[in-house]
Amino acid sequence: MALPDKQPSPDIDRSLVIEFVPQPPALPARSAVEEMEDARAGRGFLAGKSRSFGRLCGEAQRAAVEGTAEVAFRLRTMRSRAEMRVRSLKQRVGSLKQEDPLRLLGMIGAGAFVCGVVARVWRSESYESRRK
Image (cartoon, rainbow, N blue to C red; front, side, top):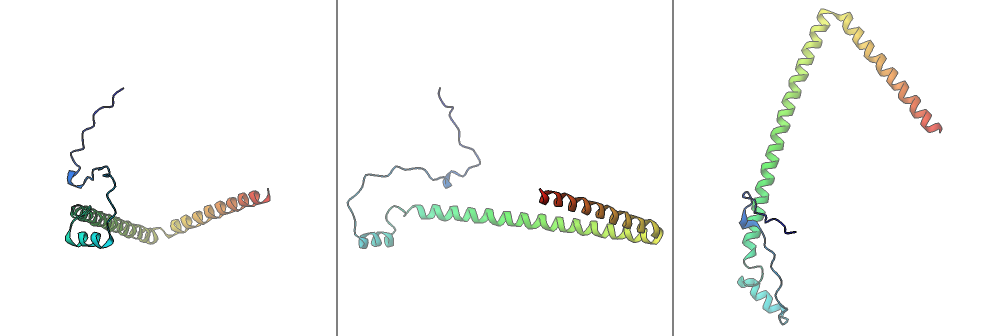
């Protein structure tokens, strides 16, 4: 069964794709001095690759900066929404305290009672699991 031909995605920058190049046959060993001279002169295996690598690093840096800016924006938005909700809750509690203080005390008492029951059940279940 033949595999379908895959077309490259149009949103990929083809200049950043590193093609696999098979290694040439082994050359006679060179001295370290010759390799250093080639590196200084801009010759050798990595001579043309450094610009591509630099471009790739630049793209990665830009993507990181954009991602950081997006996260910062979302955090600011979430913070402002939370602040608005807290202000709204404070206003509602304040008005409830002024208009119907007994109802507010009843709600606080009911909440404390429910928390006490939940804590007691949780403690008894954890006691039972330790006992086994």
